[in-house]
Length: 86
Image (tube, rainbow, N blue to C red):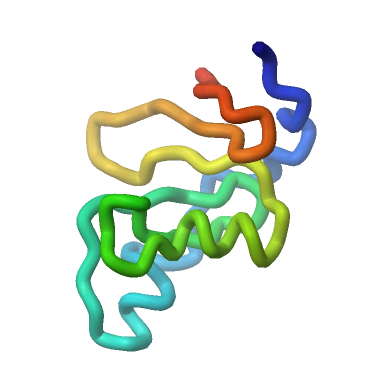
């Protein structure tokens, strides 16, 4: 399967250095994900709040990239496929 949403990749610049919602509420996270449409940083699905996935459901921004040091994979929520954005 191929991703049909690559044209929606607009940025690789994060708006924050941690999960935006967890930073506001004083909560913690496990891993971070970067929205490639708007730069939102959210916590992963292993985190209690799952803010990255909640951001997708609220905005329909389809592609996120791991925001963890040493990781360079991306995921399209719509097509459910891992991407290499190079």
